[in-house]
Image (spheres, one colour):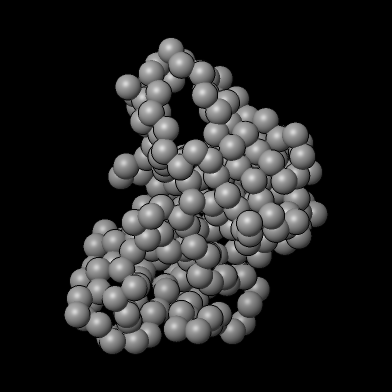
Length: 119
Length: 115
């Protein structure tokens, strides 16, 4: 079973509109982290926002916010006032606490959503 | 330079060649990672290094050989690759703060084509 599911392979949005990118996850851990990354055509993965499983408030970073619904295991990314430069692939990722006491763990990624902002 | 750098950015190699990918991080981080991004597939974790020690090998074929001489440098040595190994190889680093919020920062990637 997929651990990260992004159900929108592609989205077209008009410039200046808000956009919501969906992400659901599957884990049995109590402590985990959820991340969103942006990947322009150049290839680099750019970190956007983080939400911890114990965080009670939804994370926000500038125009980005994360709509975290723990009971539904969803962590949707909301981009307000979209811009042409927002056109890119967007990936949702999760870090599970595999090792007690911490340790470097890899991220599990979804398949991504290709967002295209139209003028 | 700042952040995470990777060289070369593009590499074309034959199946019998030996080549190496290099990653360098200037963030003072303690953990480094290799990921593979193939077309139409999610990013796949390959290796994790924590304080120069390999802590995870995600069932990667032996034709990929990682090396981490120090916390700032990570290499991926390639030999006798297959055409299906063509992909974008991304390096990342993190502070390894021990919590779930240990954010990974990525380099620009090496686009590898195996002929």
